[in-house]
Length: 282
Image 1 (tube, rainbow, N blue to C red):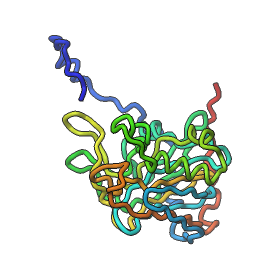
Image 2 (cartoon, helix red, strand yellow; image 1 turned 180 degrees about the vertical axis):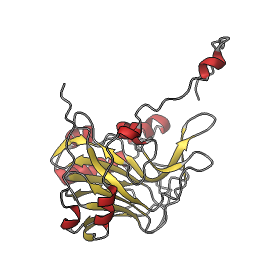
Image 3 (cartoon, rainbow, N blue to C red; image 1 turned 90 degrees about the vertical axis):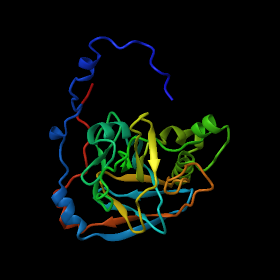
């Protein structure tokens, strides 16, 4: 809990609090993805690869530019933590903070996953979301958040004094090392804040603390993307299961997740080009 305020409110406190909010990054000037093109392309999708992510584990997968991929619920409610990289240059990876600033706290269809500076381009665009019906609930919760970071062994030890080796950070790190051949020391700085796929989260209305609640995801629900450049993805099946009780836990019921890589008929993306990096130069 925060320390209680001790400074007296000034006489004009109400006036100061009444300032109107201003959206920091208005979306009306943000380049829009060609959703009609993507919707036509997805009608022709054929599965070319399937990757299973075991409970309390992670797996890496590659998606060529212009291909689609889906993260699919399988046997029961399960959330996943997603890292995305430019496959040719791992220093360019998902930037959750800027994505949050541009699209909001939770993502859905037509929102894009932006890369870090100096590239700042969409790595992927969400093309379908079977949980888009959920919206925001009475607690202020919604799904697919970019406000949480990822469960990690460092915070776990800080709060509990225990070591736990199957946090999403640990899972992502091991899978990235296995796929790339990087050492732990080389790979750990590359593991980054995630898209919390299927996770239902928000901020409490009284203390404004980050909360989680049981995910509404069910078997065969999925979140689908198009790769805007050649991608390396790494997905962890969170040790919290549906995160309705706790995370970083061997007690929670956990299930596998499935990643499907899908190829559209090339003619449906005629004229489409992979996303270009920011043209800004300092």
